Image (cartoon, rainbow, N blue to C red; front, side):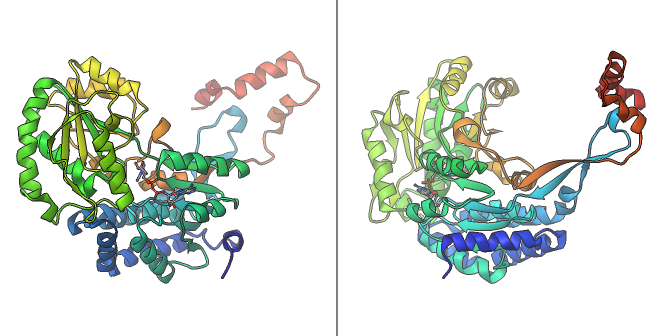
Length: 469
Ligand code: NAD
């Protein structure tokens, strides 16, 4: 078996051969990826069920169809994305061909996380293939059944010369990172992101970081409370709260909280019955260790549990839980919860809520629920976050036409649709010149004088391009 560095060297040699460059090659691989998903739907659903007890409904939406739609979108748009982009010129360059070429970076590494173990590997892979790269794919060892299945299926469908799955945990990943890559695309925690950055700095490798954090849901002003409770509960408890874009906590006025609680209580019954542990529509926490971590976080909270609170370690089950009277310095507010626990904090005014959000790290997603567009626009204008969605949760990340990624501590860079293609491409600025206009060009050669300088300054200025039109 090849060592890791042999694998990287082999892929680099293949990349240099130019095999991944033609549009047709990229399209063929993307079509094969599409077949891989369609022909192995049941096996993928089974693996996801083994890892996280993902309900089929949630898995189809968030792991299969979302990837399928991305592949389809990439195939449909690849020709346009690959086209040279001609740019504006000035007098000095009027006869030149000036354009931006999107070129593949080379051999790129994609490191996935366990909470959406198919989507988080394959959507970046779509961008990397579309852009013409060779790829090493490292699934999360924590979602082991899905990682094994990806390692079995990918070589069956995609070119083994160009795309390789490497399995392993922290130690294997650290060893892999000693190799030089042309780009590293990492999804996971902020803690590990620091290790990735350190390793990347040795080779000055550019990095995309898709991280997490605490995504607020600010409910303010007039609002349809039943619809708000439904959308909030769905986006929070989807995948048992293990979504990087799950609403982590709610900010609202005391009056809104008092209206929200009975609505949430009813909706939890409607969604998950009176015995949520027996409900097949609720996923499980990924491992007993992660279960313990989330339950300990709840145990350390000084808030009041008003719904749920129970858990069963053997079953890796945690009931959908709502906690009120949560202070800003509560244990639940110190880190991303990543489980089905929803703290509700109260603020007295719109400004107080905005200040609260702005005191924290910039979140991956920010949600505002309100019937009043002035409220939505004020929060949008006065805050920053990776993505933004009003009156719903999670859904903004399902559109391939929107960039998906964080800002500040929630991540660097973005992907999905064209944005993934751009992430894995180098934008090469090209100027193809001939020998014409040598008299004009002669102005830049010594002996220098003031007259030549003023002509040159004019011919290189944007004004000269306007006067050409
Ligand atoms: P994880 O434990 O699966 O780790 C992610 C990857 O890092 C794995 O492939 C793992 O093998 C590797 N890894 C672990 N330790 C390492 C080390 N020391 N050095 C190098 N590699 C190492 O996942 P996680 O970190 O628990 O993921 C959960 C976090 O990811 C949450 O914060 C969540 O919000 C975030 N997340 C973000 C997105 C996004 O798109 N922005 C998506 C999903 C999850």
